[in-house]
Image 1 (cartoon, rainbow, N blue to C red):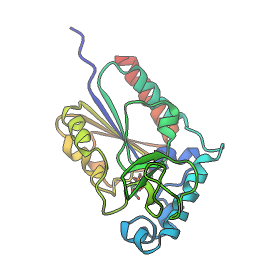
Image 2 (cartoon, protein in one colour; image 1 turned 30 degrees about the vertical axis):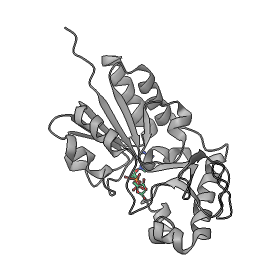
Image 3 (spheres, protein in one colour; image 1 turned 180 degrees about the horizontal axis):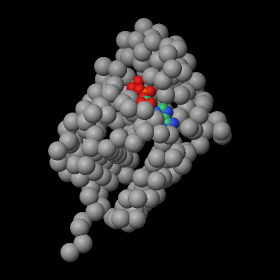
Length: 238
Ligand code: APR
């Protein structure tokens, strides 16, 4: 009897988008090397200076509209895995960019929200949003102004869809972390949650803070490691 294809949970971070031209957060040239989290990525920052927070996300949203920023071979390999994997699969990304979506991943979840969506604080409506946002922007659902914010999870806020993530981790036989420094929880704790009952693999440019928790850690650029890893999986199970 052929062995069943294991259920896979993949966690990605900013490193998978680095070779598409998007900065990571904690590398030497990262976003937090230039800006302070408490100035642009907390509810308190938004309450204190919404213009500055909107400017931060408007600049990152504008970069995503740049034709030079495209999904790379790692995003594309994960989309192919999504399309061809015979077992269960969930791609949990910490990234707010839309590169996994544009590469074609379907079984995908943005636990830190999405840069290309906006949410109204008055009515809660979430809408696709590719342009600039400002405090005066009226909500397309309720018409009121003054309440539109990026649909991203700030520090101090609960990540999205944690129940769905917990269920996927519960049943997975293979957990792969790609391009994340494992410095931010709850995502950084996922590997410890599955250790012992799932095979765990880290694909990262360099050892992360959680490298010691993984059964296997392969280091190098995502555009080299991920296509090879996917090819091996599909050769065995596809
Ligand atoms: N290929 C693979 N990995 C890479 C590459 C690359 N080309 N370039 C960088 N990396 C690795 C770095 O070595 C680092 O370990 O990607 C990781 C990026 O780590 P961070 O910048 O901390 O990004 P991330 O782990 O996604 O941050 C998690 O922190 O600021 C919050 O909400 C933000 O979602 C983000 C969260």
